[in-house]
Image 1 (cartoon, helix red, strand yellow):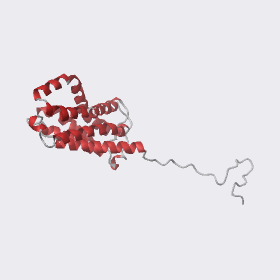
Image 2 (cartoon, rainbow, N blue to C red):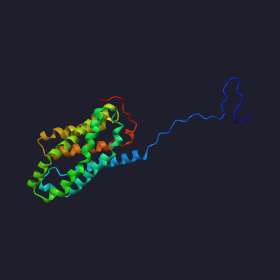
Image 3 (cartoon, rainbow, N blue to C red):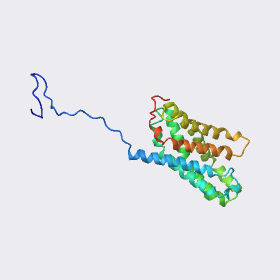
Image 4 (tube, helix red, strand yellow):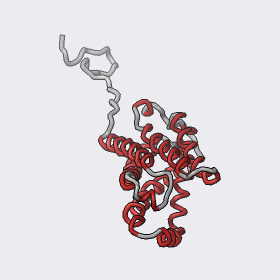
Length: 225
């Protein structure tokens, strides 16, 4: 018997016996996705570590601390890496204006982090605090919106990511808790480091946790605003 084709009945179409069934495409992780995963994960850890090493206060004594330089160098680099790896989360936030706003605010907050680190690392130790405060006052129009982009963007990212189903509850809760603490911590009767440091450490680790394998299975739900 021929292996090419069999004789069909009259009127029936001729079909090759060896016709192959179509195969479903095999999903693969692109190099671009892997790179973003590494950048976001490493950035989150470095950002958390840098803030953990930061002194509890901003004063002349703190600038002489052994961890001052390392703290600002690490969280400055971490901020840039997070901004570079943030596209990894774009598909997990779902559609809508809130999702886009959260993404943009967080990206602005982290990509500008090295500017703050540079001032604290290279400028602050070489001038008196009166001069430093004058410089900071001149930069208020730029620095304040950037600071609020970070403070508002982090919890908004957690809320949007959880609603869309793209972020796990622990990660989303960590981002929301960090943002709320940074937003209302000014009213606490303690040194600023007691609330800024834990909040920023949690934010960094939460973003790093989004790169773990168990987060890959979370598919965003449709919807958005």
